[in-house]
Image (cartoon, rainbow, N blue to C red; front, side):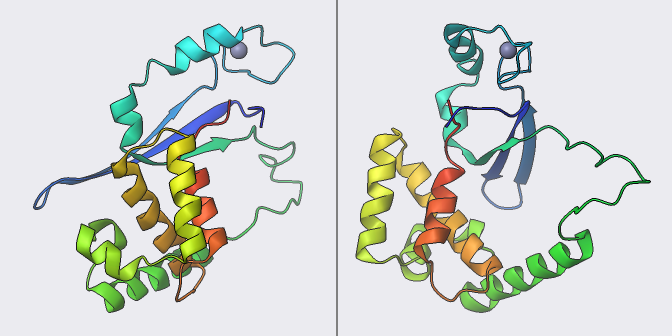
Length: 182
Ligand SMILES: [Zn+2]
């Protein structure tokens, strides 16, 4: 898929030992000029590749979710125009709180705190989905760390959907957050 968004957002969740937990949300442009996909962008593929390579592999490996943020739609910033802005914050907050409660009632902790053994217990996939995940790891050159992070994100997506099990669409969404389109 060709990248058409102006801004790429990177979300990094770093789980350190004991009480030192950090959540980092960062953003970067998709190309040196910031207008990739638009006629005013004249960046070459090599320039884009070199620009993105400034973010090191080990750092990227620790990023749980990467997503493209499209340009703001026309009219969205105007107060005199009614546009569909999707769910309001209160609705999303309620859904997140419910998902968090599911995690705590199931494992006694949030998904991002699950140990390797707990992942094996609480983030079970079907055999075909395990194969799908392994194929993604191989295809995108991801690490073992990425493998377990994808499982945690997939479990969280399932919780947000109110699903007891991790379904294929939850897994594919989690995998989709691990790669930037080129
Ligand atoms: Zn550009």
